[in-house]
Image (tube, rainbow, N blue to C red):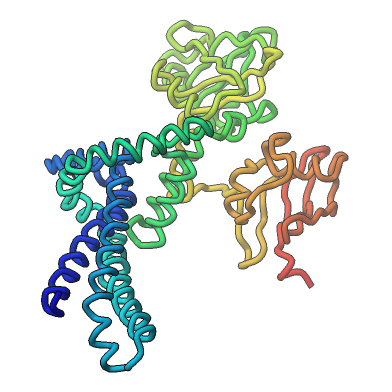
Amino acid sequence: MSLLTASMFIFFLIALSALVSSSELALASSRKIKLQVMAKEGDVRALDVLKMQEHPGSFITVVQVALNAVAILAGAIGESAISPYLQQLFGHEALASIVSFAIVTSVFVLFADLMPKRLAMSNSEPIAVKVVRPMIFLIFILKPIIWVFDGAANLIFKGLGISTVRQDDMTSEDIYAVMDAGAEAGVLKQQEHHLIENIFEMQERTVTSVMNPREHIVYFDSHASTTEVVEVMIRQPHNKFLVCTDDDLEQIIGYVESRSFLASVLEKQEVCITDKSLLKPALFIPDTLSLFEVLETFKSTGADFAVIVNEYALVVGVITLKDVMSIVMGELVTLEDQLIVQRTDNSWLIDGMTPIEDVVRALGIVNLPHSQNYETISGFMMFMLRKIPKKTDTIEHANYRFEILATNNLKINQLLVTKFDDVV
């Protein structure tokens, strides 16, 4: 075979190997979501790629058979065509064979493997839809060979109990990683990233992490006078107030809205708090619900206010739709009384009732020990100290120092959190 004929054969084999090599990486690494979008936009070839990814056995067999056959054929042709010329140049048969092998191998590595795969890696979906039809044709041509090798591989995997079905189910961790990558690349704005992150967090956070706790609930006895009710409503910032019998918070008969009650007072002067036109039925929810479940409950019932009870049917707090949405909006809204105030780059003032999830996010701590045992930073301090906390008590964890600045009886009002780097 002449050198020109051999070169033409090698060029053809390089092109064939490049096609198969790029097809292998492009079809294997194409993203399912991107292919689904392309299919919805009208590119039916994307559906062929998705189908091939679901059953990759035939495709992998074709790739391996083609690549190995091409490599063996190219080596034989290249060595037989180039070696005689190199032998005349070097005057040594063994050296000529080694050099000819190195030349053919280098050309194939560069043009038939390295460059096609790098191109396919950076443009996997566009290349995948272009090569999927030729690969389907090759699978059809090589069907007998595929049946032998693919069948043998399936029998071996089945005997070993190994599943070869591709799993493309996306987890919440995958979505978090995609969002982080989008934020770093500038595709997502920082505010959009926080908003999406907060929405996913709603599924993990329980209602007790954002409720107004029992000790802060303002309620009325059903026999309270109009004057007493008006005075309390003027002093308190709340819009909804529970109404109970016998001044017992476990005997709730409903709630009243301050705006409706005060409007009625202006019209009638004397108003009964248990008037059916003012008293609304209260919605009761268990303290085990997630914030997402609470939001769904509000949506299905049309309510925007709920009373939270524990397993012993004791009232532990109340929550409003505004409380839930404040978690969704997160840092996009400005609260009058911020629970976490950053003083310097390495120190924070934190309210004792701050949910532990907000503390973890603000400080950038990966996790706190036994976090299932507490819901607030006060609970964290009590758990770590193993006693009722008092002023000046400190603990150190994850390169942070937590120091109690102010207490009220048994309650922690404020903590100072400082990074070790900032501690003298």
